[in-house]
Image 1 (cartoon, rainbow, N blue to C red):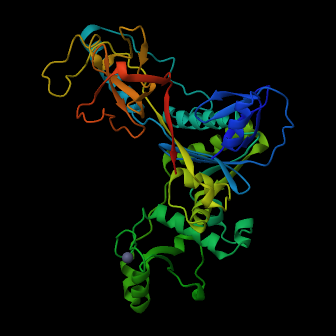
Image 2: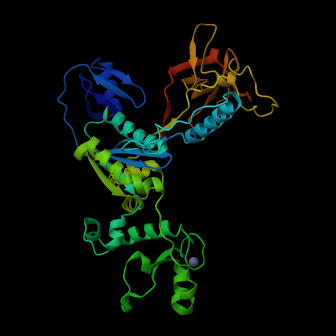
Image 3: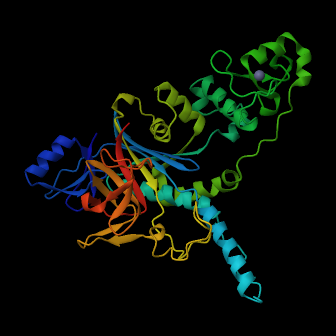
Length: 431
Ligand SMILES: [Zn+2]
């Protein structure tokens, strides 16, 4: 656990121990600038020594894992959950509009001038994911001095599959790396299914093996089209009974998820342009090998820390969980009836469902997703029920109730505001 430090000009310095931060604050040599993550700013000059920091970025479909390490210390870890409901909401909006125009507009000229996709276009969902990743890297560099950034670009290295003889750093480290690369490829190609029995991972003692369709002794190559994914037991069966070879399912043509395939190059280019030589790239199979080596279970944050080459998992103690939330809802009425109703509520604007903020009688303002404390518990306002009650959730989306009560409404009278809302709810947890 560390406290982040800025110099008097607001530039990041190496993080320090929280105890040291407390002393500096007590002596009046520093002030608190941020609670999550805990950051102080020095009020006077400082030597400003720096050590090498590596920041691993694991960017998945819905999650981003981040981990910054320096030597044997983990300085930062977080797991960010992005919203995945946006494209669904946009489709819904489009349908409502279509229907409304069908009802209300007799004729509307078709538009045609705005159909061309500009250069560098990415599907909005991919673009958003990419930009969120960049944004969070940028946020971290505000309190971590000059990290080197490592980004995972794919699960395996297709170029090394086409040229299995290619010589590279990983190949020189031993056969394990080449094997793991091919295995990850075959798992993706066969969708994790055995080509003989068609079942998924067989567990301990019946794990995956790679079968050469034409044996190497007869000139068969290591190219993926000569390789089959089999359980260990199925592999033995095939060698005992070569007639089973005919039963082997033909390998599928491997297609990468569309967004990865066509946009990876562009993403690499954009990352390089933005981060210059501070960015490096790696592959999922390498991450996985290293993560297993240091004995960490699969999570996004653990992937990120494995990427950096970290070797001291004992130091991993806290993690910031961050969730993207929907702060606004602009529709003024319900389009479809709510659960338990037959008609949509035409007065929904006045109703709690769409309330973004309220002012209680004592003059205090409360907004959706404000971070608050109630009854000693920290949570986030997820909705309002009336002029003076709110629903409060913890970071995992569970409702916070007052001690001894089984209803979810919490009186705002007893609630303390910790931080005004933004588009993210975040909470520091033990890892
Ligand atoms: Zn099998």
